[in-house]
Image (cartoon, rainbow, N blue to C red; front, side, top):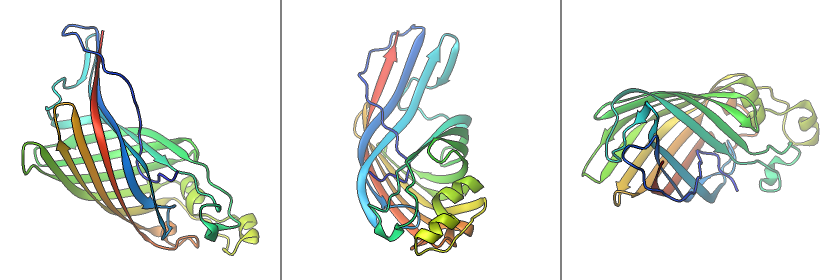
Length: 251
């Protein structure tokens, strides 16, 4: 399974929240499909599973985050969580990489800060590869927001990804040992801008509990990442469609 872009999957049963309970939690989670490059820099694409997660509301005693109204939009500055799943890279799936070491899947966790206005949103996140590459990445993004109808929301805006030296070495580097076993020259990339691009999103509210979330992405590799000998295409595209269900807990 190749999932180079964002994936979060959580399945659970809903429980009705009491109006004055000590603990309340609501969120949306779901599954769908996506088409994306086989690995960073690949010119080949594969279909795979995609997932989605959206935090809604949390109340724990006297502490409350978010809004219990699923139709409410929180404006202004707010903290945010950030998650990304990157699928494994093997020469069994991509024979052109023969001689390079396989790269295990990675799970990035982190957070940042976001700002939301009526027709604009922006965010800055930092994540760490708690499983897999064990390095840092930073992401910046902004969106113009359009609401053609009460049920449909459209977003479009730029994205930028920064990676530490360990990150770029994992996905774009070639060690001397790998160079001797493959057709690639040794390459030691440094930290810096990894990619920039554009993301277009659409969310359609099917009901109070169900929604459909679609995303189109374009990314172009930059800096040392783009100069890597393993890169066959600096441009990559992705599409995903996820069906989300709202869940609520309380006791």
